[in-house]
Image (cartoon, rainbow, N blue to C red; front, side, top):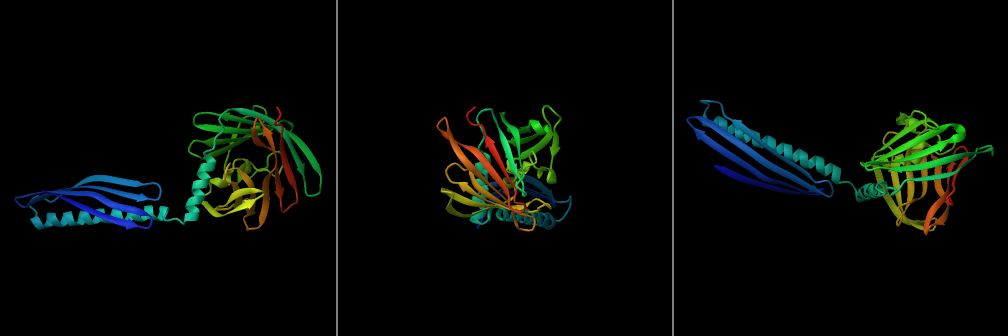
Length: 311
């Protein structure tokens, strides 16, 4: 015989259902044999989860009929426990506050913005340290686009160094550095990505927008900032490194999804750096960043990247 069981359950994170649990039984001469086929689905706010399985439980030869039936009841109990755990795990992931769900969705929209063509821009990196000493280094920025990733290369010929940031299709990021031009590239991880670009206040992780990779992303509010309608996003680092960032608050332009301003906090929660585009220029009918500033709020130094957009 076959029996069909249905067990829907409404949760705050979505809808969980045991869509089909079929139990087949065969009994005879003191021997019991049963089979169970189940389908379970949790339909949360995001990332639906589906599980399906087929198992058999057989009573021992010459065992009493009741023993085989007890095996069946025990197995069904295990299946139900597994499905409850599945629903709980999915609900934990998807019962996030709306502000966090909105934050994660916003970050994914930002990271999915890929350049369409290869490009090369030259410019200058102007540095003013806390004692008002000034230095300038020429820089070259190159963007290379492929099917599964795009690369951003920043080279400083005067300092004989280059940095490469790889943005992958799965939205992950990888960092490399080496001697310029043509030097061997070495992979960078952890604290290594908090290294300055050409002795400036721009770190490698800044250019790679590494704070968008942190799991904590939350929309705080919407407001006008620097004459732009913005979404205020808080990115929180679950494991800040000494000398690194613990969180970053960013004002994101609602229309372009560009960063209007970002303020980074150190591992102790004090303001460390502030980033913002300094000026825009209309090139071929589109506004592009002409220069951007990075201020170190603790040392008083300022670094400015200026691009030669007329080339």
